[in-house]
Image 1: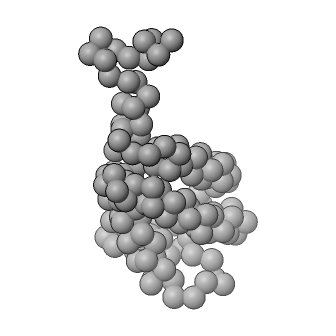
Image 2: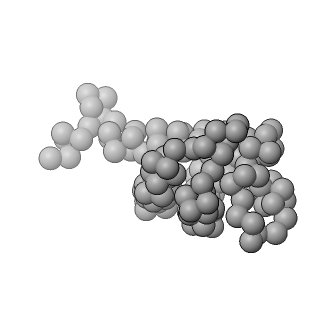
Length: 140
C-alpha cells in the first residue's frame, strides 16, 4: 500500500503536500503580517472598541504573523511557530465575531454578511491546516 503513495522517483506524496502547505502558509502569513505595517489603517475598523492600543495591537499581530510565517520555514522552529500561529488565530477570533455582530465597512462599503459569516469556520480550517502542516508531525 505504501508503494502507491510514492511516485516513480520514490518521493512520498504526503511529504510533498506537507512541504507545499508549509510554503503556502508561510507566504500567506508573511504577506498578511507585512500588510499590518504597510497599511495599518486597513485594520483599524476590525478592532473591537473594548481593546486598548489599536495601532500597537495591529503592529504586534503583524509581527507575530511575519515571525510565524518565517518560523514555518525553519525546521527547528516549525512546531513552535505552528503553535504560535494557532494561538494568534485564536486571539484574533473575537475580532471576527465583532466584525460580524457590528458589521464592517471597508472603503465606505459594507462587507456582505455572508463573507463575515464565512470567516468564522475558515479560521478553524486555517488553524487545522497549520496544525497538520507544522505541529502534528515532526518536520523533515
